[in-house]
Amino acid sequence: MKGIVFLGNKNLEIQEFKDPVPGPNDVIIEIKASGMCGSDLKFYRANSGPSSLGLGGDDKPVIAGHEPCGVVVEIGSNVEKKFIYKGMRVMQHHYEGCGNCFHCSTGWQQLCDDGVKAVFGVTGNGAHAKYMKCPASTLVPLREEISFISGAAISCGTGTAWGALDRLGLKSNQTIAIFGMGPVGLSAVMLAHKMGARIIALDTNQQRLNRSIEFGADITINPENHSNLLEEIKEHTRGLGVDASIDASSSPSARSLCVKSVKTWGKACFVGEGGEVTLDVSNDLLRRQVTLIGSWTFSKHGQADCANFITEKKLDVDKLFTHRWSLDQADEAYKLFDRQSDGKGVFIP
Image (cartoon, rainbow, N blue to C red; front, side, top):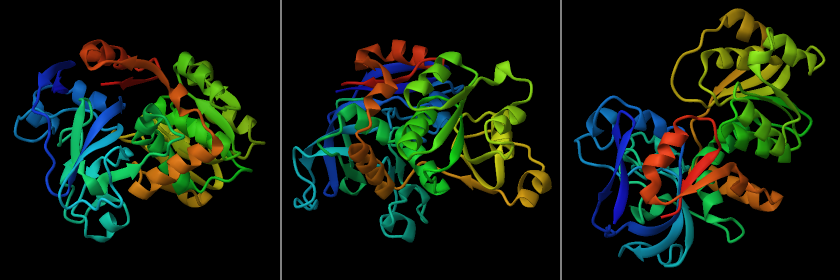
């Protein structure tokens, strides 16, 4: 089978791999949709080969793609057929832990006490291929009402937005500011809107900012058009600030404003990876009783909760995707995605 491999320096290859064979506790998924995630870009853009990229650690090629969705086609001998069966529609929680520690038992395999065994699409073969092997324990059922491409979004980007909103405990009478209108930010807008919140969306990319209105944003602010963003946000909140905020941009200035824009007793959440932020701890946090939350993706159970919410609220997650690609179009797909100006892309193997 063919699989997409990142080489660094904005290069990739479509390489040939043997079709995977399940171990006793594994399944094989026939991939129906594999989403492109913003975190792919750090490997796509990295300066050198697989070991430096953190992909496999020994210079062996690793198939990219950590937003898998598809159908179970093979099952290992130890897999309980009552719960996992051929033809089952599934998403995958793309981390493998020990399976026994507290974090693994509560669905947080990425926080495994023994260390993560594999991050599929990063250190283990992922979903940018026709087939993918993974432990049966990492599967999350995909309801019939949800399309495969929506399932791919829930498997990382949209699930990450859900995880942040869950940590914030967002209520229907609250106002939230969301910084960065990439796929995670737009997902947060869409979910928060269905939760009944009032939404202020911020992004320097006007095209992405305009899209946020389709997803439920009540107010849009382009930071490039305002000299005092904090005052601009306060003008829309009776001078108090927002109840909650999310930074999905990884911008140091956006992160700082994410904290400063919440009102006294407010909550700010960082989901954008990497980088740094500078805060005045006393004035920005302590003396306003502000809660600052770091939210890393979501649990396996949270992924299922997100899918259930989307089903019950009849959310059209498919509209996050502006581009659908075949595996053979990988080079074109990632060159476009690297500009970070359009919507989300997905491979349909």
